[in-house]
Length: 172
Length: 172
DNA sequence: TGCAACCAGTTGCTTTTCACAACTGGTTAA
DNA sequence: TTAACCAGTTGTGAAAAGCAACTGGTTGCA
Image 1 (cartoon, rainbow over the protein chains, first blue to last red):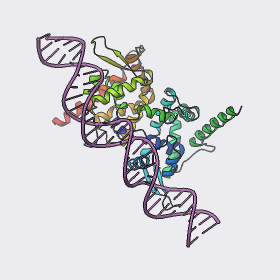
Image 2 (cartoon, helix red, strand yellow):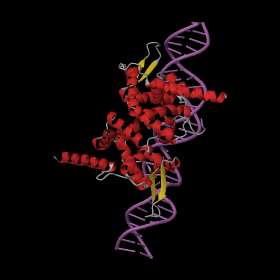
Image 3 (spheres, chains in turn orange, cyan, brown, purple):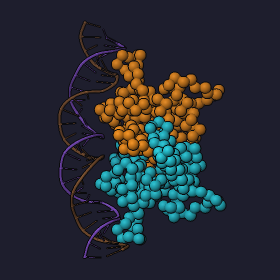
Image 4 (cartoon, rainbow over the protein chains, first blue to last red):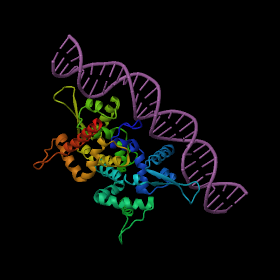
């Protein structure tokens, strides 16, 4: 066992990187919300993460090779966080957690709709989504068939549809 | 949003139950090591959990409905912890975490072999394993075809084979 | 050129949780 | 009767979480 790990069990090693209450939420916001900047992650976090914790987690995740950080050419002070391949491959973990949470916890309808689509689509859908993430975060061109609707867009549309339906219900 | 949760996102709700460095390790030991008693979980934990933290997590997991606790008829003081259906359905989450950890972290060979088999077997293998867990933890009889070798046993045998091979290497 | 809005964090502080070691009160088998 | 076993509990110091205010710099616009 190496001195810097409690054990060399793969599940334990995963938990040493991601086993806290914020890291996977940040990755969720990057993957499903396409949040790429510190301020986006800070102010649009529905759970209300504190700025010092966000800074600490981003630093850790970059050190662990889950994220990478680059300058945004549009603004000297702006940093862009991107997923690495290691980070992109967390999608199945997040998807399973979303499926479990939807099934066994009191998730709200509008936030559960993505989990439902991820559940129904299964691993093939996740693979498509990961290809989209590789295009967006790693610059690897996505070869998509004619008429392909990105998973990202489908998830977003489904979410907005539920929100719109809820608003309509409220009015009536 | 209900007052007792940071948000009603399914991923967040999952993290509120399992998002720490020990809960999923306890569930791992119950699932893959068939540890059912406090003392087994305490003394056979390769990461060395402290007794107060183990007690706290078991209490929480029972409260959350992931585990159930019952008296062991063989010993008045002995408690048996069992997975609920909610707990059994964490297997895919653990499996994905194991796959990710094996691929992206420096897992040791003997502890990674289970992750490899879970990866190769995929969701069909997980489904079989979950049926075995339902038999063991919920008392639901397992209808297995003639000659069926339980997943639990296959994982265990593969682990022991690697350990034996390592010992042989050491001697030579 | 000045100013407000925006940028990624940092600092100081209090509260909560973690981690370690020692201990408790009861049970069981020899 | 006694030693080993059972599920925890207690006390303590260290680490991490959480909150609010703040920093030093950049940018777009009047």
